[in-house]
Length: 213
Image (cartoon, rainbow, N blue to C red; front, side):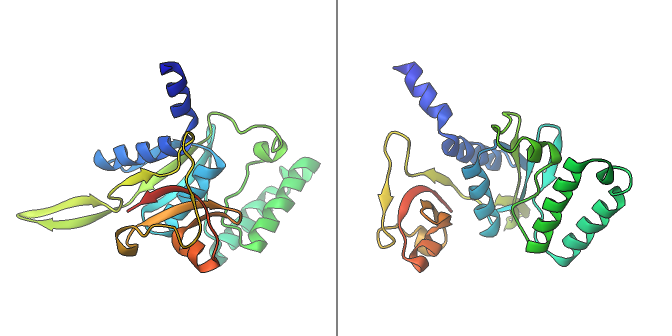
């Protein structure tokens, strides 16, 4: 029985992610590493968008690919960097040229999902390496106290709602409000991973993954 419980805990990547972030915030760490999964990546994106974390990066083994926001400066820098490689690297490899074309397309579309490395592009149909991690930079604010200031995390707490052993679903009318809307509920819906506000606006329900405040 104990073995089964341990296996279930390991397989619950969302609970593991929330626990790591919570412990890192309590320890006042600047960053925390999370095992990579697609769901964890989307949750990290929401945490960044909602202002709970500073930013995040996806680390593929020894190569880190930064999740860059779509901006004019990003597109210009991307094109300049790849143009400088055309003569020495890209033009000598049809496969590299294909990757270059893909990256250019991402830049022109303003993608905010990050850029796959050439190695990942080459093996995108295979499983993601277990060494792949999400590096989250935590966000803090200064709080004035007697005789000085202290660093306070922008995340007060994180709570898992739906669990592998007990799935919890709800319509857009049944989604709880966290601290009067100060916090958020993150849901898995037919339209992807969204916040409670987005779910209510689109009038869609789903699985209540977790709450953050």
